[in-house]
Length: 135
Image (cartoon, rainbow, N blue to C red; front, side, top):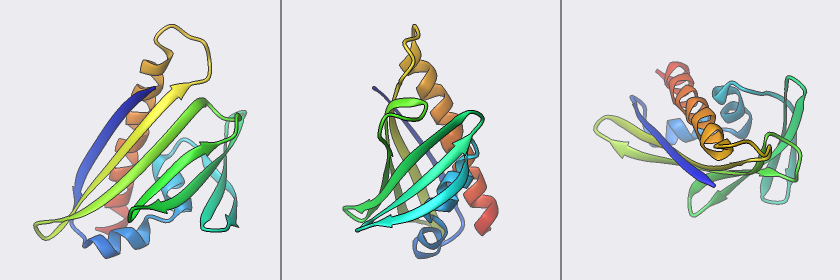
């Protein structure tokens, strides 16, 4: 697995940022998939996300006060993917950090490196979209 971290400053308070970081919006902010269905499973939220020829389920939970999500099952572009979102106060706003570990399901040379590069782009887009949404 490869791990990538992307962070950025957003001129909004942590409580406000956290209100915007719903599972549906996180998928939309990343920009690669569209939300097809949202279900509640106990303490978790399951989001079925679809894209060109793909469908996958993402399981969102709160762990240690942080948003955490992972690809459920074996359908989707990754053999494994998990992401943590941290929001901390900074100056008169918030530092938002996405950390994701990925493993590509296709047996390609440098596949995990390619997956991490793609994932990093999605996470940068997520912070940019969040910033545009709240500022």
